[in-house]
Image (cartoon, rainbow, N blue to C red; front, side):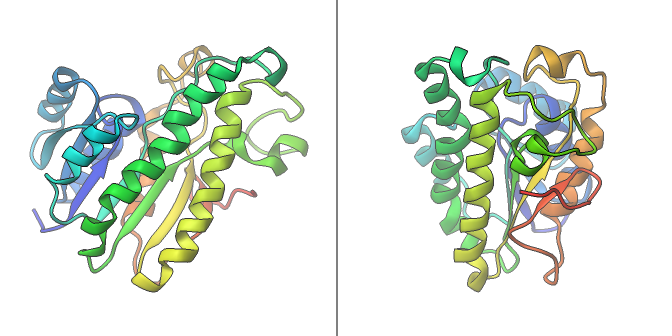
Length: 238
């Protein structure tokens, strides 16, 4: 065990739980962010030594404020919590679905990041990792790429929210660089999680994606910031 601490949002399942497990294995104290206390506690018990429950709903501003008072110093923040309500194209997606998706995937990231910035500023090597998506890349969405067939306008609410998250990643990286922060986004690839039916049917291991997030969470001081990377460490075009 070392004196470093991490918070992973949405860490009671899927990629988030695997990220928390990897960071705990590196000796960090890891706060397992979970909306549901029971599911979060179960994840903590499965992860084992180093894991701590932090009840955290990224859409609840008062709850975020309460959670932030429980963490004095934070070295790593992984904004993993996210939703994908449907695979519909924009013309078939309601404004309410866009609003609900952005509430978690964009506004929730801003709310959590800003609330925990004081704790992150107490770290000598603060790191922020935003879990994005390769489908948020405008370049990949309009050109041949290694991950998916371009030209589909599906999952509009999710993909556009992650594109907005990418923009925030750059802006946070630029404005926090002087304080030693490294802020990067990760494209985890299609993984067998309950994010949406397409992901659930993919069969690809979420633990593999978590390795990429852990690398970004533990970057050395000469590591990159303001970047967008695939799970295997290769750059993803914006």
